Image (cartoon, rainbow, N blue to C red; front, top):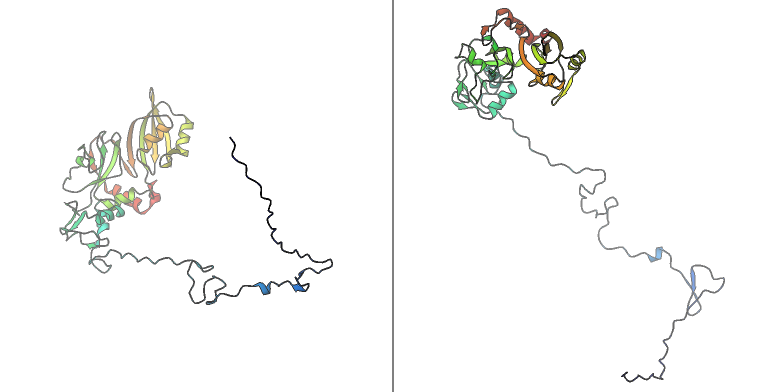
Length: 345
C-alpha cells in the first residue's frame, strides 16, 4: 500500500532581495559608470592597477636572476659551458732514452733482425716480450748496443752477424712462416745455416710453389714487402678452361674482393693444354691468396701456381727444394729497389 502523502505547506518562503542593476544611461561616455548615488565614478587605468613590487634585490634583465649572484654557464647567452681539463698522460721514458746516448733504438734493432716492422717491434716491447741483459724492457725509445748487449725475444737470443741472402724454390706443402704449431716443414729448414735466425721475404701459401727469398736482413725485407715500393712478382698459373680476352681485360681493370678492388699489373696466355691454360701474371702488390681468388671470381679455378721471379731475381732451372745464395749483382739490384721504388719494374 502506498504510504501517507505529505501535505504541501501553505506558508510561502520570503523572496531573497536582489541586487539593483545599474545600467549606463543613454549618451553616457565609455569608461565611466553611474554610482549608486547617481554620481559618475571614473574607471581605473592600467597604471593604477599595477601590483606593488616585491621586496628583494633587483633581477638581471638577461638572466632573470638576482644581480647579487653570478649567473651560471648554462644561463649565459652565447657562452658555451667549459669542458673539464684532462691531465696529459706522461710519455714513457727510460734511463737510456736520448739522442746523445750511444747505440740504436731497440725497435730499430729488432726490425733489422727480421722480427717485423718497427710498429710490430714496438708491440713486442710494450707487451714485455723483449729482454736486454736478462731484464725485461717495456719502454719505447730505449737505446741498446747490439754488439755488446744480450737481446732476447721470448727467451730466444738474437744474433747480429753478417747479412746472408738465399733464393729457395719452395715445393708444395712447405710453409713460409717461422712458427708453425702443426710442425709442418718450413722454408727456413731448407737453408743450411741453422745457427742464424732467418726469415722469408713475403709469403707463398701452402699449395703454391716457386721462388722465395730468405735472409736475416730485416730492414731490406720490410722495405721490399711494403706496398710503396711495388716490387714486381711474376707467376705462372695453370687454370681450368680457356680464358677469353674479355676475362683478361677484366683482371687488369679490377675485380671486387673483400679487401676492395684488386687487379693484376699484366696478364697474358702462355700456352694451352687439353682442358687447361697456363697464364703469366704480374703483380706489384697483393693480398692473401690474391691470384687464386681473382681467377675464381672470373670462373677459372687455379690448378697450379708457381712464382718465377721477384724483382731482379729469377727462379731459372732450380729444382724444387733447392737453395742457392744470391749473387753479388742480385743483392745490389735488390738494394737499388729499396732506394728507388721505380726500379722495381
